[in-house]
Image (cartoon, rainbow, N blue to C red; front, side, top):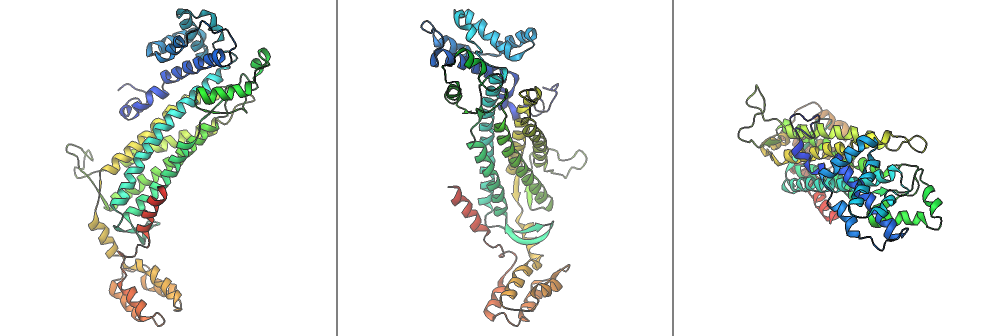
Length: 453
């Protein structure tokens, strides 16, 4: 581990271990073997292109069900000779068929397929598994954020627009904003059907139709993709899948990652302001030279890894839409990094969750900011003055408050001098405080949970 080339397989291996069986070289090879065997079964038992009376399907299924690391290593050995990874899988399966006494059907392996028929379906299966892990982790993060929203639903907090004091909110409402954003993206990823194709060298079923012109290959390929692989068929391709599914999922993940970075930065800022305290863990060190420090390292780690994920996802989304004429090989090397994308993304989620688990609200400092910023009431006061026809309400409150520290008494004197505001409404204005001027923040939290149901 200490000699790993990347942090994904070294420092962060514990955080990415659930991805290894999916996106590793072993995972890709395993999916290729699965697709080849499912296609073989489809050719033999669904389309019945060959005599199958003496073929035991259990023997075919055993090859994929018993597939091991040793088998994957055998395929890599074959690849040294073939210099072609998919062809090595084909030869491996043929050897297995010979050993199982099924030599008569081995030339049906990889029937009418181009390499990308196997690769694009394999990557589609990997993507489908990866997005399930991703949405499960996003769901956990959303749950954490929702719990914070409920916990702090009624805690008033001064807002900051452009970094300056602004109309109050509640701490819970600021969490629910992020929950809503992430929920949209989780649902998009979760509900998207991953697409795949199996249609030959240039997408026209050329070889298929030549040898079996009576088979409806368009319908057959759709049936294979949907029933054997549980994916969504795509018909209109060159040799390669145009990879809209990958782009669709990754673009949603990009938006989710950007939202998480936004959350990371807000939490970092609130910790810096003292609005949140971090729980101290015995034995941990914040700084190598400043013993007092408790750094927001989990949010910083999350932000950094989400940034890496975004840069890679943006490249994959754009690159995988492009292939010269009917095929070039630039997509192949890029797809090898699909697992890295998911790796950086889930590290970002897990460290954001870790950061959230270590914070406690510091109500004293939040209350102090509210008490020290009576000028926050300039907004509702000038709005009320407009309603009742007072002259130059904005300008008068700007003169009173801008760049000045004012007190509650200053505001009360200002209200007393208003000429057109009714006395009963003046009393409402005098009772208003920054702490109570939170609008419908709590109602919005309740609305979120009502709509989510």
